[in-house]
Length: 145
Image 1: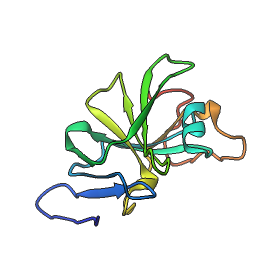
Image 2: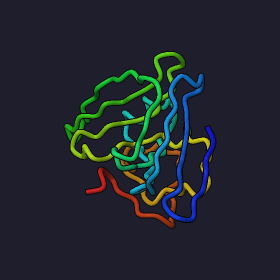
Image 3: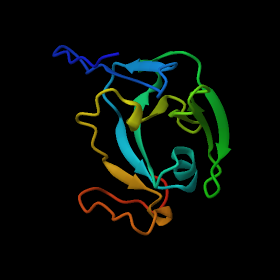
C-alpha cells in the first residue's frame, strides 16, 4: 500500500504488519500521537514504550483479521483489546474500551511516518530509567486525564 496526499481533505495513511497479512488505511487526521510508557505497552511492543496514533474508529479500514488479547490496566482498571497479526505477531492496533470511537494505530506499522510527532507522553512514572523525557511536550505520570 502507498500513502497519498490530497489537498482537498485529510491525508490518507496506510500500513501493514511485518508479513503483510493485515493491512489498513485511514482517511482522517490523527486525534493525537502519544508515547506510552505503561508496563503493558512495554510488554506488548517488546520495547521501552509504544508510539500510539489515535484515529477515529470510523475512518479505519482493515484488510485481514487481527487476533486480539484483552488486558486490564493494573493501575486504572481500563480494558484494552490489543490487536496483532496471528501470522507474524506484529502489534497493530489497540482498542480503548473507555473511548470506543477511537483506535490506536501503532506508529511503527505505518507505511509513511512523515509528520507523526508525539504530542504527549503518558505513564512517565513507568518509563525505563534511561529514557529521557522530552522537554518540548507535556508529560503525564499516568493517563492523559
